[in-house]
Image 1 (cartoon, chains in turn brown, purple):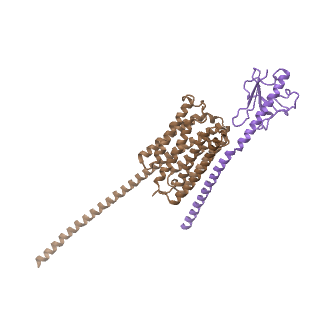
Image 2 (cartoon, rainbow over the protein chains, first blue to last red; image 1 turned 135 degrees about the vertical axis):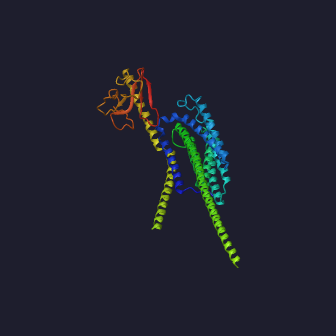
Image 3 (cartoon, each protein chain N blue to C red; image 1 turned 30 degrees about the horizontal axis):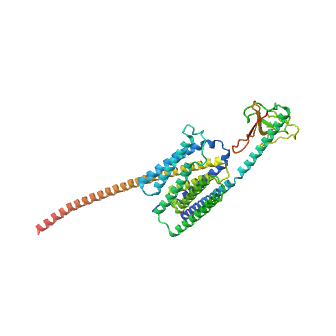
Length: 319
Length: 161
């Protein structure tokens, strides 16, 4: 039986998620007037790639040491792939690391970046699907889940269909393939976040909350990437990278937190073991003491029994 | 007494839970509102309007300088010699101001027209107009608007001869 987390703790977690999303939107609002934000684009992509590699390694390590849930395997594979693709893209764009802070990004929609985003969104959706198989769902819950997801998929099909119709009718839209692929990955991300929220595992495990945090920021990153907001194009690309960076930081924090929780549990088990050992020692000492007392009584009884026999023999002789 | 105390504590925790729940719901609404606001982004729209106004105004200043050069054959002497346009001492003085010390006074340069010069939409105070002018020494006049918003560089450079 899993222990349910305190309600206050869960409320604070979701409040902090909303506040960080709001803070990021605030950054997006003022980003147009921040001059230095452009210079960090390749650097942040590189750091995000390194973080993704870290996350991948941690997730795979977690899977191979515990083998509790397959979702860690998928998260691990996904993040390793995404990290490699991101780093490859930075190296390709800059033509080396020497101009990390001065080099401009050559392509607007690099193929590797579109690929890495799509790959990660599909992997996150699959990780939810796999984790869903592990748990037993109620019938009503499943119905609700199916209805919501059906609605999301339906609206995305309509949206994508409109774009394809526009393309077929000859109305030229720049980067139509990127928009369609981007919309598909956005759909997978929304499905994954819905799945993780409806599974309600965040009521018992902090790590599920951090996955929701990751997905929320990945959705934000995808929205900036497509781009849907009224902002300058370069700022949108920049903010998309920054949102991704925060998403990775969130999941990395989740992993560190889960390691800390495991460590704490281990400590508690050790403490429990120590107190049980102490109890065992005390019981043992008590049993030994009782045994000794019993033996002493037996001896004295035996002694007194001996004297009674003597008296009985004397009485018999006199007779 | 103890029962009363316990009941009070339960009430307090319930209150804090309700408050936290309300905060979470309010912040979710705020995030959704934030998304909607960013789709429209009226702040950016206003900045864009002001920037296009600036572009038009520096074009009109440049046009007047061209008229002056075409009439007199010389670049106005009041325009400071500087390769950098947005530099101290290059700011154009407001026409209605009497004290143009430290600014570029173009009132004598405006010929045959209405004696009026544009002022940057964000330059509310002071004697400067928010627009800068300089002569790079190679026959070019530079006019710029360093108060432009959202990192947009609004500058004009024109060869006068």
